[in-house]
Image (cartoon, rainbow, N blue to C red):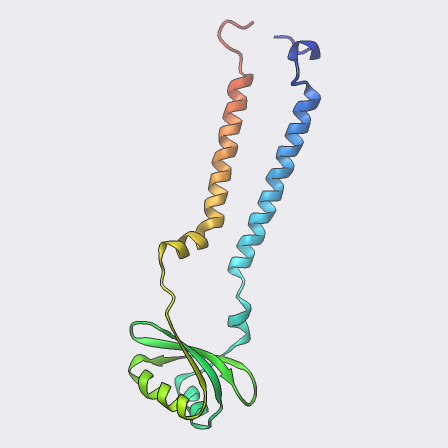
Length: 164
């Protein structure tokens, strides 16, 4: 097999090198993008880092002082997590309360004029699983794609039986 440009046809070495450069750049752009996505997933969210964790007893003291402005309850089987805002000092907080105290606590908060919202706790369904593992799935899919491309090139460039 001769390597002269006239025998290679439209896939000259120059076009081949452009394709290689484009694929290499695309590969590194995707790798950097995946690294950024993984970093953003692992870094703490702003909503959690900006709110102060409170113990149950400290939260109840704030309720009795009429210092809770609003709260959103996230219900689970045995507990309820409340995320809300204090009046003075105006800051965000989160606390976990027993589920048995929920009815009396919401009544007490309503009497003190606090805004109350109730939501279901975060469930771990298949969409949450898919969103959490999307970067890993993309990385594996991209790796499989690159391996197939390498095998295709290797098979294309390997000498065929009968070629000399």
